[in-house]
Length: 194
Image 1 (cartoon, helix red, strand yellow):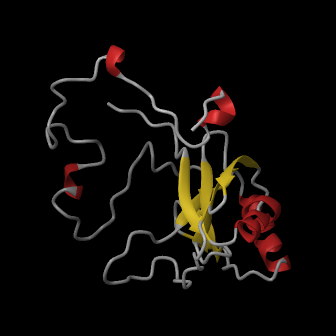
Image 2: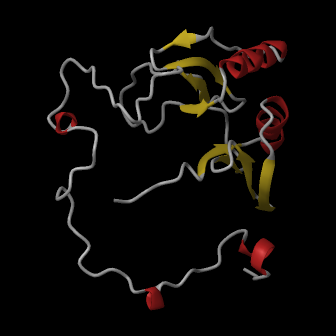
């Protein structure tokens, strides 16, 4: 089975990288660990944890999205509702709530979802953010919970991946045929020129 080790980065977009940096780095305290760019394009990465980052492309003409309440149903083309960032202690939720209030940025009350406690806010780009702390003693990763009163047939198959639902790999790429091509940023670490 494929094992993942987190979200390397979630890439968002902004038209104002400075305001975005002030929010994510300076207010929320997430170090900016990579900054790529050239005229008309920037791509900055902020550290969420030792394995996870959030990144922003800055492109001319990008405007903040209209704020949409987290989890409110929508219709039509749509791809993203909100990002939830885990915190290690309940006190961190309150610290973040206090920072956001001090900065005059809207933030919800602390909400109990049974397995997590959360606060909700928006970044300067209108991106909906949730900060969550796992309730001690409740581990949905080791003991998954399904409380949907009318789950789909696929959901009723259980929490584990179901083999045979997708075609099997018949011809894996041999190690001798696995080229890796330089992309934006490679010149910073390998001296390659684009």
